[in-house]
Length: 251
Image (tube, rainbow, N blue to C red; front, top):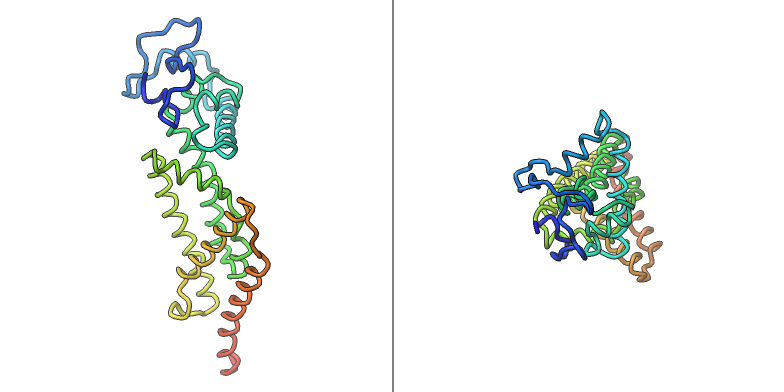
């Protein structure tokens, strides 16, 4: 049994069969040997596929698998995401799960990237529109991941190096783009970095947002209105500091 037949917990799926073996089908001798060659099952499947193998049917099945994996992860945790469970949720065989995603790492990474790529694009759009600090605060909970999603992937990253590398790369790019947005907002207000460094403002808003989101997910009571009012007052004070010198000089 290959490592690809293992579930995320390191155990083979219940009653696990060889990855590309179908009941009633003769297994060929050109099974995947780790070198990237197609298996006999993949060759047969590809030969039956209509021209344009990246068509809508292929994409639809792939998206169904990604949806199924994400649902399981959010409902039961990452340990529940096995090829057998994902296949059952999507209504296909476990062997086909590995046809679309060679390893479980590949599946986990694609589930994450689907949300992460859209999140990066949202930040790029925000940077182009140069939002104000008030708008950044209003957008603080606009994201494509939930606290539970993020926490599950942080836990998963402790066990799977490929997933950890993907998360690290994404968060570095995300945080840099986010910092660029904050830097632009402070520059537009005319607030010097020594008065309020954009990085500090970024971490402040991120920290508050994440803690409040986790509290909400866990059902812990937090006075969200009081926090919101306090932050808005601080933003208004920064804006007033900018307008006062201008008024004094008649600018």
